Length: 116
Image 1: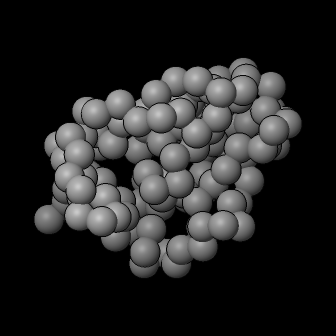
Image 2: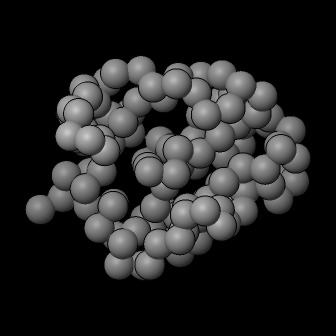
């Protein structure tokens, strides 16, 4: 599963630099697929292809957020999700809406970083 940031976030920003996939963004900040990954373009649902550096709509305007499709729970990088490890208020938690196996998370990591 991916990690999510709850509304208990105090906007300290400790989590953002810890993410190896650059899946964490400050509230109101636009995000990109290419940021922190090797993706130059992405085919999204429906077959539309978007540039990796194309700005995407923020998921939250109020507090830090995690782009679930870029979150690998730090699988293949660290033994535990680093955002949760550094969060001073324990608001980086499992997202019940995104359940993925270890195999799926590692495949996502390989796709994000274009590993052979």
